[in-house]
Structures are given as C-alpha cells and as structure tokens.
Length: 121
Image (cartoon, rainbow, N blue to C red):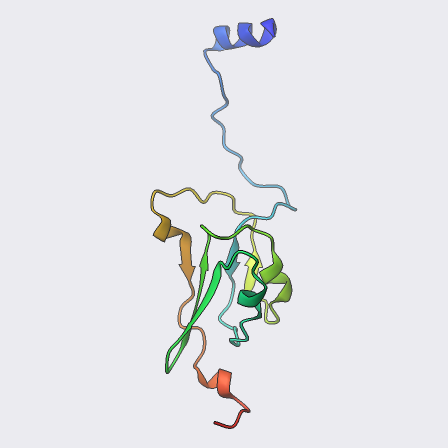
C-alpha cells in the first residue's frame, strides 16, 4: 500500500493515460454492416434479445438500422445472418455525446423485389 502511495507521490500519476492500441482477438466489439447482400429475411431482428436491429421497408427499398445504445454485443445477429451482412468487430470505442449518433443505418440495401421474389402477389 505504501509503495503505491509513494509511486503516486513521486510520479504525480494516479492513472495511466495510455489507451489500448488494439483489443484482443477474441474481444467482441460492436457489430457492423459489412456488405449490402441482405435479403431482408429479418432473422437477425427477430433473434436480437435487446431489439437493437430494425427494418424499415418502403416501396423501393429496405433500410436496416442497428442501435448501439440498445445492443448488448451478444453476437447472435452475426450467428444467424445467412449472408454475413452483419459481422462483429473488435472496435471498443463507442463514446459519444448524443444518442442518435449510436444508430448505424445501412444504405438502401436491396430493392423490395427481393422480398417478393418467387412469391405470388
């Protein structure tokens, strides 16, 4: 205990200011969209325990959004995604001042025709 106090007194440093340069390989960071190959099956949204994944469909396109504010980084979405559109990264820096910056939206993924392909309308 005295060694610790003596080091703090001598160096005037209480905590280290060095950031990690890279997270460990097995570290489960934030999920991200790696491709636009989503077919709109919505299995990832259905399997997400926190409801962080949402699909919005209009006449011509599907928008997939993921909220890091709600995500618990469990990795279930990446396990069930058939097209590997969602992948886990080892990125751990997610701090922000505004909650709306924690929502990632993929660009217009696919035409809505993919959802109705092979189905009679």
